[in-house]
Image (cartoon, rainbow, N blue to C red; front, side):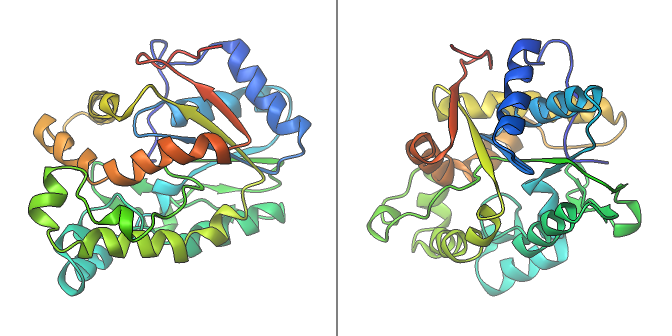
Length: 270
């Protein structure tokens, strides 16, 4: 199943804002338009809505998430054994395959036939290529992700743990150091392929656990009978994202081409 849940009437963005986002992409000639926002902020929903509106205008659109390029369980298990146990869990930089995202975006620019990677979040696995949807002749690609263009931190910034998970399970800083080096080394080639970046700026990280829990329930509701994470699992899961999420909150407003504030209910402000 694709990683993004379909938007419902209750979490959809307003038609006027969707139109503004599409106009922003087209007026700047963006072939790859990026939407960044913390977990559960509505970036997947917005991407789906913008894609639908673009298709109404006669455009051919592809939607891709950085989450679709997570490493599979086997690769992450190897990292967990060889580097640090926390790397067995998907989430932060270092648990993706940026080269796959780069290759996919490059192929989409050629307007030829392209298969789009898909990650099954409930099953915690990348789907086999035979199950990836195929597109061709794409005019606009919407690329969404929670930490797009977020810069790495300094060595000094890595010293103090940001939460209990880092304090108790990464006492020597090995895990966060590995993730930070990956962010600095492996992701800039991907960021360079993004023509324009919209950042959905939330009030703060404290809203992420509830937003991500809502997202998990939507995923499970869309696939009855399949088991995902429970509330405690979500609470732990989001702590893996906290450091880079706080870095995104601090730095993306000055990096993004367009920053739009959203409130705790994900309503656009202004």
